[in-house]
Length: 421
Length: 114
Image 1 (spheres, each protein chain N blue to C red):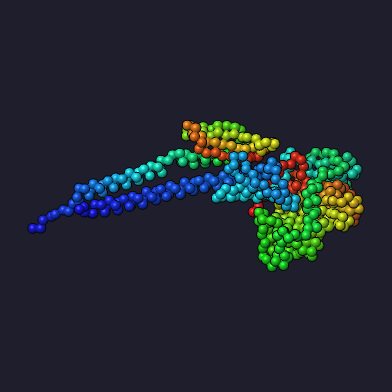
Image 2: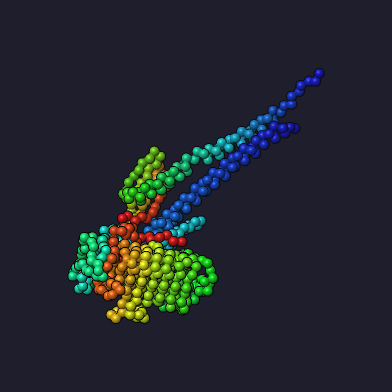
């Protein structure tokens, strides 16, 4: 009979060695698993980036609100779900790459980047009237002017103080302005007549007034806030895929923070000292108070229809700063009706102003301005095609500025404005 | 006078114990070897990281050409494949291949070339 003394020690050592070996095996297994997962994760993120590039190039063949599942490289291993949504003047591109264990999505607001060689500061339609400038007016960049040219004027005791008429090239403009995106304007116009359907996600005005903040991801359906009466937004934070539509008016009070949302109403008023970043489209008038700061990419637009008054206008208050686009057009051809954009003294528009009709420009536009006619209203008189103490400076706009689709040219290419969630 | 008497193990018992311990050591060394010296998986990770770095470098420096980059352990082949019907969309395709022709890692991404 064997005595068990040394066998006991041997078994103890075996168990210890087994434990050590087992832990080594486990550690190796988990390290490899972690590396594999990390690799898959990297690939999925890369695929979502590739999907977005495909969307930006227009090669994906994706139409609005109709997501498309695609195999990126044609080898059956890189599935991406691509989607394009219209969001006011911009597009929302969604690229969602997925495997069995991971998924990753990129959501971006998409606009149009203009040709780097384009230095256009001003396009003024040739309506057989010259442009007259006075005071401290300064036009920097290429200006497309009527054949009648540009001249100095003496108004309200002020004469032109500059040494050159235009600090850039003078080119001849056409009778008609470059066309805006009619299809997009029509899509926005339809929102004025929007009635929420049974399949639409809606939230009542009372809920929005009771809540401190509302956020909706751009992955979800649009969240509509609809009212046939006026809507007053006060002390709220509203951001994301939210569209606020009123049949009469929307008032944005100064302590409200709006981000990425869309406002649609015949009349919109933004109170003094408000800050935010949103798109607002009105049918009759859009009033921006004084000292309002609206960050990029903001779009403020007037889309005048048959129901609009004789003059539909955007008024930008004094000392306000808007980074983005001011846009005004009328969809009906009625010569008695006008659209007008008025920029107040010391206001700064960083980006672009497009008005298919009249522009009363008293502030500074760092970017480009396109209009049919300038209208200057002083305390004593009204002048046509006159600019007084106004600045249009194209070089001050970043070459990386990305515009909305409202005024895109054929040479422009799609680019990401901002990443959303 | 008390006699000093040492208590020993039986020969057979000691031999069985030694065999068990030796087998255990043997297995442990085999496992350790498999884990520590599995150079290919290490190489695969290395190749993957290199491809990601190369792609990043290519994109930021706008170095958008076909090329082969050789290394002691593997070579990297880079191809820029144009996407049909597009002027400026390309597939950036990298492969890392060992000297004996084994594919270690692959990198594919659509990029926009200005």
